[in-house]
Length: 425
Image 1 (cartoon, rainbow, N blue to C red):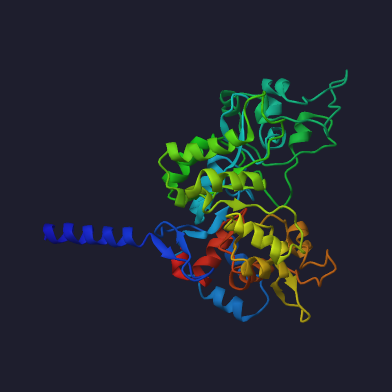
Image 2: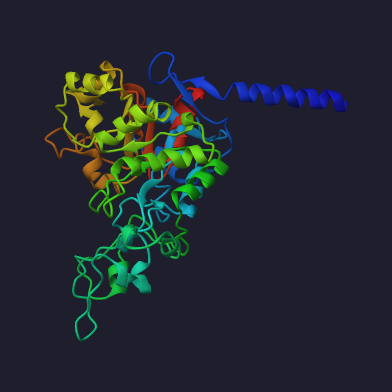
């Protein structure tokens, strides 16, 4: 009996290992999409609330039928800065929450400190809105520190700027993350920091552990997820201090994955800077193979010829915001935009951002939905929070995106488990 059990376990382990690389059916014939084997996740009530909020439709009925299944991790579901709808972004706690909600890929936005250590922050100069730095002595080191009048009133709330490049890694690690917000009309530090949007929460902001990029690699690996680091544009002049070049910065990011023994197939390095992407393609071809060009022109009229040039340069994956990929047809239905069609014709794979970052969709949805909410002269087809599932369905099934960044990955995980082939989760 023991021999049989051991043999069975060995066979099972081999099958699982062989199944780890699969063909992703959602975007092109034969496209290989690396993912980890499924693991049970916990979604909480939000995805179920969103499905219940949908108008009656065939899609709603399909999504409702999935309510009682066991949900598992999906590489379609990408944790944007972790799970910042409710957790302080780019913190250990936010990342763990995203992984528990089934995100198969997590994002560390990468910038550098005064001693050139890479750390996870959305911007090099956002410490004043995303951490407690203004409550510490390190506030004096800020590029633009807070100023006060003789009565102790804050006088420059709109101008405060605190950057990772103002402090060392050790000093950075001494800070605590908070929900990203600031009251730029405040007259006190406390008032300045107490500005979280009412559709988010401070419930989990009591602890926000900041991470270096290296620490994020270790954490993500332990969580069994893949990596999508974004090389953030420096807010300081480059070369930094005269000798730290943009190329060294881009190479340092890749080197930290190599040093940690992470295979290139698990890393989706991103940048809005086209030269960064080309650098990875030309100097780190294994990592460059799935480097992501964060297309930041936000131009619906980018033509097929331009996209073919990107493809010729070696770019395989682009990531525009959601609204760029969407349009509304004459019948009031959400459909792929011409931009999305051009990208597919050029053979480019698509990732998009950012779901669950817009507040209440019944209140329009804002910037991320501007081609479907009437802001660009198109029909307004966003009426309720449940419409997020309609948008997600078009992105997945008609546009053909291979992944969606979300501030609350439970939503994308629910959809992926219910509507996409099992090869994606």
